[in-house]
Image 1 (cartoon, rainbow, N blue to C red):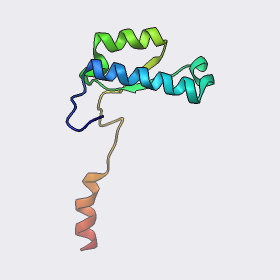
Image 2 (image 1 turned 30 degrees about the horizontal axis):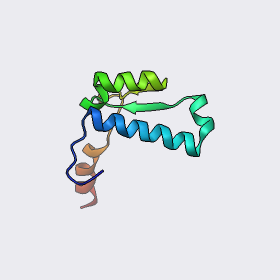
Image 3 (image 1 turned 90 degrees about the horizontal axis):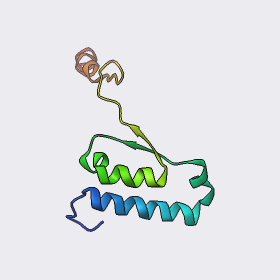
Length: 87
């Protein structure tokens, strides 16, 4: 991508087509076993045009899970207490 290029569904679909060609050229057996992409809720990922391209390629898409503190625990709250204890 050139610097300053905005990623929209058209650019993303072109990138997917390049990806498909690269997989065909380098790893032809992988296309027959299926391709799975992990997408978040970014506009190029959820665009109708992108969905059409992915259906045409017969690729599966896993939706990125919503943020949930129970599913994605972080320990950043421990650092303050640890700093005090180490100090």
